[in-house]
Image 1 (tube, rainbow, N blue to C red):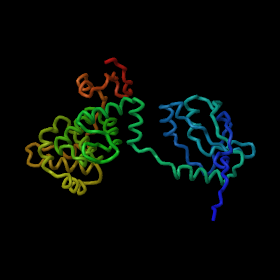
Image 2: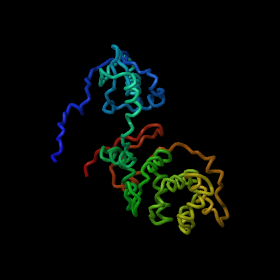
Image 3: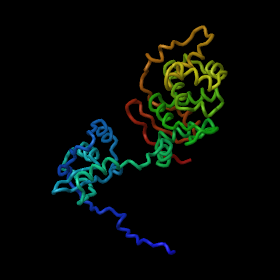
Image 4: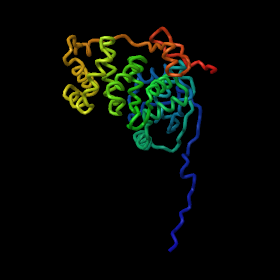
Length: 306
């Protein structure tokens, strides 16, 4: 029996919409199904405004009114940056939607969307030539490791943690964190978990030079990662438990133990991420001009001719 062949109409897969530039003042986004506006999100996005990141606003035109059902934060960001609600935005306009259908689209618009993983975002930043990710990648590779999406020998896959330590504590703390973990556990993949990285960085930040690298490597290296993990669970959840467990082992049979309370009392100054010429030469990356003000962002890489 011959199977019936269904004729495909490609228009069935093309939204029946048109695009218009509409001033923000002529858009309405106070429908009951909308989430509450996040002023914090709007201000953060406005402070890092990039015109190429602006998406068309989805609008349902009912009874002559332009109802926004996807993009309310977008129009508020543009309003804040431009300083005017007269500013027009590109709108994808649906003329045949009822209120219930709008709400259904809003509720399910991200249901089957796949979010980017931290590794995918990191590698996209590498391709874009963004300075922070290039520095982190070069630092990891200087220890004969690679940034990876999978846990395996010679790989560091806690990408978001690498960036977090760099942002929170600075380049040198991240560098020392990797050096201590490699020295103690010889590059075991489990030693580069998010909790291990964060716990070690916390110790370095709180105790500075009082934390002796040779003692850390010697004492912690005698403990299996499985045993350390078990002890950390007894101390507390997450990186806090790991930091406490490592400190207990570090302090064992020590005449001048480091005080546990300092883990929670020493927040320290915000790092400047300053790097020396020796740091840059060791990483084999272009020279970076670092600001003296800790609130400024790192300058873009200068292109150099080898």
